[in-house]
Length: 170
Image (cartoon, rainbow, N blue to C red; front, side, top):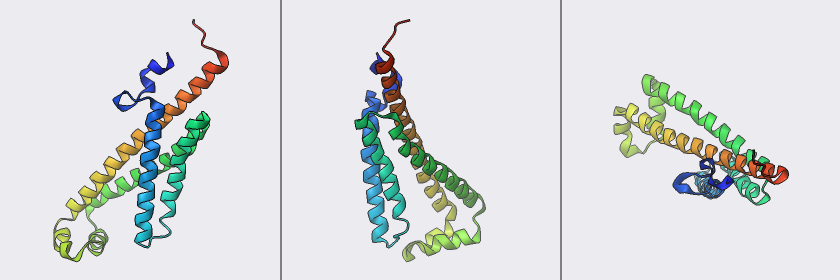
């Protein structure tokens, strides 16, 4: 009966625990790719953040195989912090979109390709809007990841409760 509950399914009617494992695979792959990119670009200090997030994603595997709901929490906390930071970044981007201060326009020009500088100088709001749209998409995905992994955690917790106390019919 526990498996038939719709809370225990994620997209495409996949069991919530399998969904959490898929999320862990996607997250670890994305973190390792980002870390490799940052190392190639010489941003060694920034490469530690994807490494920490990859460890948090790996905790999903450990929680699944250990059947311990509290082991999902490293991911839930790390992803929650990432969602909060991303939300603050979106607010800053919204301010930059509305105000387009001089330093923001200068930063966009300095961080872009020389060939495209004229386009970016003419359309800073377009560039800011595109960055914001990508960040909003990433935020929605991160929030969905958080919900799926949280539901997997509560599923394991309910399984423990049923196994310890037995399924009593009322």
